[in-house]
Image 1: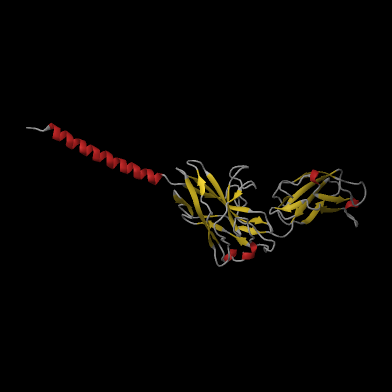
Image 2: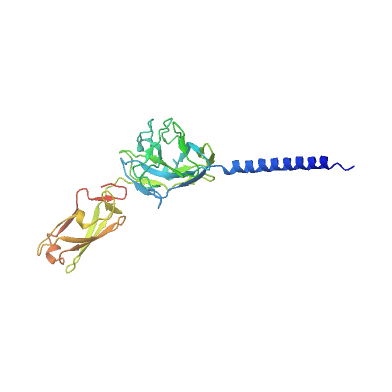
Amino acid sequence: MFNSTRLLSSILKKMLVLVTLTGVIFWSLGLAEAATSVAVSTTNLINGNFPGAPIPASSPTIAIVKLALTPTQNATLNSVAVQFASSGEFSTFATSDLVAIATGATSGVALYNDAGGTPGNFDGTDAVVTLAASPDWTPSTTNITLTPATPVAMTTSVTSIFYVVIKTSGTISHDDEVQATIPVNGVVTSDGNGPATAFTANFLRADTAPAQIMGASAFTGSATIMVGFNKPVQKVGGGNLVVGDTPFTYVDGGGTAQTITAMSHLAGQNFATLTMSGNIEAQDLDGTPATLAAGTNKIADMAGNA
């Protein structure tokens, strides 16, 4: 006699096994998906637009790498590994080029947490993360690990932004260069590591030479003076040179006295165009010509050197 009860029991057991196996597969897939996304960039940072971006001596803190971490579940940032190039064109960067940043331990390299201000911009409102140790960069120790004294908490699906930061000393040499790399899986979290491929930031170049006027040209009968600089310039504090900030002082050379009434300049240009109150005269270009000088603490290079 056919035993339908036994058959039904066998079918139910197989279904239970199948459901259990399916659950294990989904659970495993869930674990694989539940990993923190790690995006590394230099977006909106000093070296984000071009290699060799200038940095000044005795600089404030400078963010050189940005980390955007998005966990799929509550997690913590446990450490960040950074490799600094110290060979070839970057070999001149010395230990003394960096100075301590307040991290709870003396170090020339630090980790900051984006907090306040404009999200994704290192703008002075961001908080330094206290480190468990003091990982100074040196020419003989190019690989450092920034380990928070307390792992930094991150919230599910909320992107947390961190910055790798350096600070230059007053003894940094002109044209010294440095470059940072975040290696594969160099960002360690409690919920997976990243990035999947190494990220190398654009290199930075120390620029300690002051901005200078290299020449000024004008023609009689014209109200325009062209001014050339030794490097790209901006006003002190950032922005275009504008006539209202009096970035130049002009001493007339004779004839009808002239004054500067307008100015054309974009931050990052190595020239400016001045418009005078009247046409340049022969007396301005003779044996006692008119003179043009930079105003005190008015013009800086793109590294902030005035």
